[in-house]
Image 1: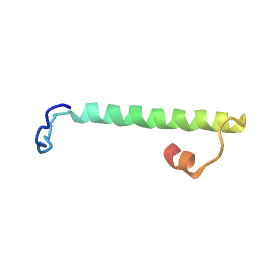
Image 2: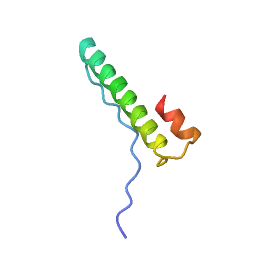
Image 3: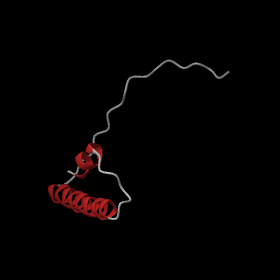
Length: 60
């Protein structure tokens, strides 16, 4: 058996991001969400993906 170590409190990491970088990341996220929704719809139309509430929630 290994050595038991005491639990440490969680550490917080702070980062700095410029507004334009944040906007770009948000735009990329939105594009990926749209693409994912399109791919899910394509699979669903082909009968390869069952319709579930979970799939519909994650597409939003």
